[in-house]
Amino acid sequence: MRHEQIETNSGLMLLLILVVISIGGLVEIVPLFYINETVEQVEGVRPYTPLEQRGRDIYVREGCYLCHSQQIRPFRDEWQRYGHYSLAAESQYDHPFQWGSKRTGPDLARLGGKYSNQWHVQHLKAPRSVVPQSIMPNYPWLLETDLDYSDVAERMRALRATGVPYSVTQQEYDANVKKFGQAVADQLDINQARDSLLRQAREKDFDGIPGRITEMEALVAYLQVLGTMVDFTRYDEGFFTTFR
Amino acid sequence: MSDNTPNAQQKSGAVQTTGHAWDGDLQEYNNPLPRWWLWCFYGTVAFSVLYWFIYPSWPVGQTWLKGFHTVSYTTVDKAGQEQEREHRWNTRALLLGDLGDAARDPQRKAMLAKVEAASYDQIVKDPKMMEFVRSVGKGLFGDNCAACHGRGGQGVVGMYPNLTDDDWLWGGSMDKIHETLVQGRNGFMPAFGQVLKPDQLDDVAEYVLTLSNEAQPGEASERGKAIFHGQTGGCYYCHGADAKGVPSQGAANLTDKIWAIADVPTQKTLQDKKAVLKTFIASGVNNTRVMPAWKGRLKDDDIKLLAVYVHQLGGAK
Image (cartoon, rainbow over all chains, first blue to last red; front, side, top):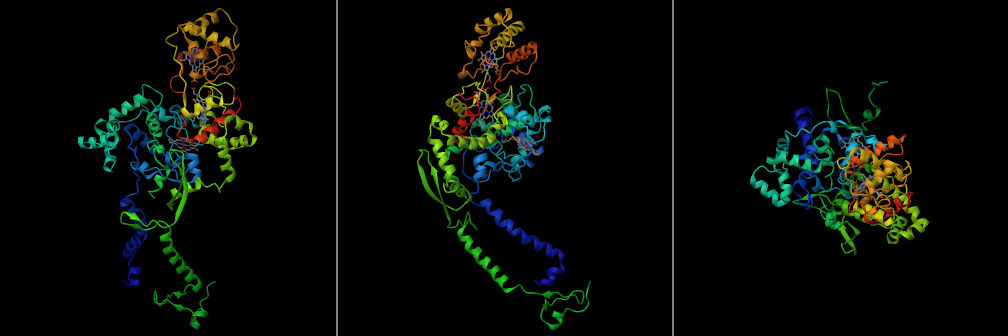
């Protein structure tokens, strides 16, 4: 093909530019889909329960990710401040994932268990009432708005289409029982989605309002599970280096 | 200013054109890159090939070229044995090497080992170690505890206890503070709103106020005393017969003027103080007052450092 032909045919030029610039991306990204070690083989990582998933939707809706990342990088300072670096395995069921490097507030990848439910409720309602220097916005409506869980099954079905193992058939359910245990498998069953959501909310009462299920309930349920699924004491630290 | 005369260079033929002509007469100079620049460029290309073999690079089938560069690090296995290991270069191995690298900050490393090995008594008596604890502890406290207990550990009345006074719910000795940090705490006091009648609540509140000399003993407080120390209230179970609190229950000392939960000091009149206490006793403390457990979340030596740090904040016992 002659130089001149390309330069005088903008359609062809556009196509060739696309081919050239996608090479870099393709070489870096595509192999990750078939390289065996991309996702570490660790135990404990499971999809979110219906309540946690609704909380995650609210997290995304409110744009928390604009100020908070959920990705601890393998650097000394991050290790000391936030804890163990994030594993690929830990976000394998995240759609969309919440990685990033924009940190106006702290990273939240290992937030679960760090604070009490009560603290989260108070902090989300009015951050400055517990952290006077905070620049985080108030989210008072989370506590005032009842959670809409009418479409939770549909939301799970959508995620299932992307490969998250929420179960519909008995066969899928059985596979989940085998992989995650009965209690978790029940939570991942789309047919029981609403019941599981209600059960978890009633049992744990994350928002501290016994009779109600607010958006706060779901969001705090989600925050409290972040980074807690993998039990790092079960692994020798050197183990994770073998995957990279 | 444009100059329409043809370039002198072009005239003399020193610089060639690329040979294209657009719109009939529009031409382009061909100025080749300087030699030295070109050779540098070829050099970097050659180096990149070398680089592929040193660092992880190309995907190959289900794996990738891993590179022959290695990093060494030490890990501590479950039995506490240090193990020297070597691993091919990657950011995770690099981090482990970095964390264990004594050369990077030898003083800090040595100090940390010293504090780890020392007993609490030894740490407190050694000004150098205490200085270290203060500086490192401040950072740890800021990252993990300040959100609840406040930057300086002053707490929030009713929600998060003040760690700088000498009133302790669970005990203020180094060991007790350490225990608090390791396993977490969750204060519980039953709600008496259903158990006690309004006038009984009134009496018992009155009695509690006399304990710290906020009120003068009288008829009402005598009735309250009976409730406190009898089966009706059973308060002495947790708060002790002397009402000085029972640390194993996390029950507050009611005889000092320090209030952790019931916001008595900011109330002006006796009536208001009593009202605050009544509301508190009626509702009790359910499982909302949670001090998280830090074992597993923080490293053991960090917990030890924090215990000393909290201990020296003020009201150490």
